Length: 138
Image (cartoon, rainbow, N blue to C red):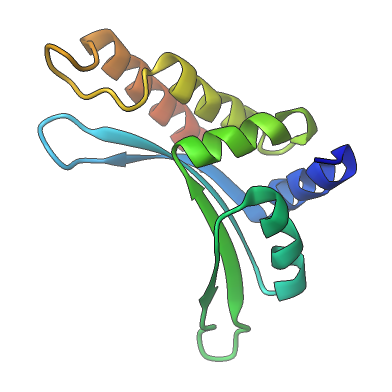
């Protein structure tokens, strides 16, 4: 992948994207998901970005008087892999991306709580990273 294209998409994410950690409570212990989303009204720009980000383009009808928007969303490991590529070029979302990458690398992603799953310490790491991203996204 060409550095210019990576820098271009990183700039789009800095301006129009979201990098966050979602906390999903399905059972007793929460599940944390890394999310990367780019959404805008210019379809050709989203199509160009999607070539780097992967995934599929989803369309959302605009509310009354607003334009239709297009988005690409990457979740969990897909988001992690893309953020690893884009990290050197991110500015505004650099800290969010670094925390998301840590979630994957230190939070033992994919392991559940229990004897064969993640430890209490890993759950604490996940929760701490979620809290930090939450503050950044305010």
